Amino acid sequence: MQTMDPSHEGAWPRDMVISIDQPSTLTLLLFVRSAWGLDANGVAPVEAEPDPGSTRAPAGLDMEAANARWIDDWARAFDAIVPRPEWISREPDALTLLMLEADSEGYFDWVASVESFWREGLDDEACWAWQSRLTEHHGSPEHDAVEWLVPVWRSGVTTIVELPFAGYYVRRLSRETIVVSAATRRDPQLYSLALSTL
Figure 1 (cartoon, rainbow, N blue to C red):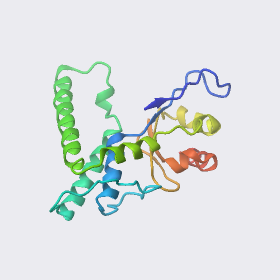
Figure 2 (cartoon, rainbow, N blue to C red):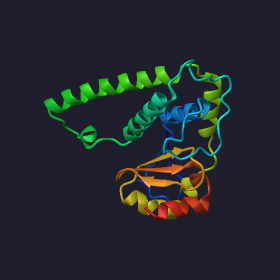
Figure 3 (cartoon, rainbow, N blue to C red):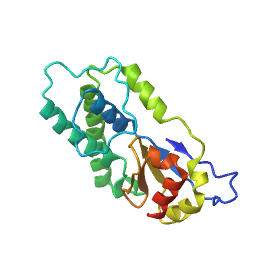
Figure 4 (tube, helix red, strand yellow):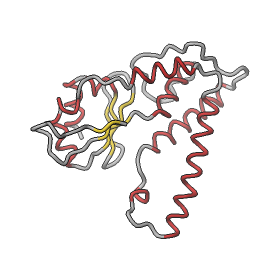
């Protein structure tokens, strides 16, 4: 995750801070979907299919079960990028703290399970190379679109999640979080259009 530094931008409000996130669990799932030859599963195609390297689906893989699990894991990973209101309470009571602790442990167990299952037969170098290309910086799209970004920030947005989807894609997940495709964020016209629709 990177945070845009507003200190030198005249048009950028001094107190505006925007975080850019490219969640590794989601990009791992997109890589594996392509490398294992899974179905699209109702999720947008990626802009450029990754080179799978030596990645191979595990021998005897039940493709129907793998697709079903992929859908579940994608939904849970996608939901995890939006903080629940109780997670940002400043002074949770004792019961809330216990619930959060239990939920946090369950979440980390799930992340370990995702890593273990989807990394079987994975070419780590090929996956890492693809994920690295996704996180390369291409200028400052937010500074180029600041005119449209400021009203969105004033409406509550503090986090922009970028995913390597093909073409135009924008979705507001919560008051604080939006998702855009890399193709949208990279194109000043598309990015301005996306921000103006929020």
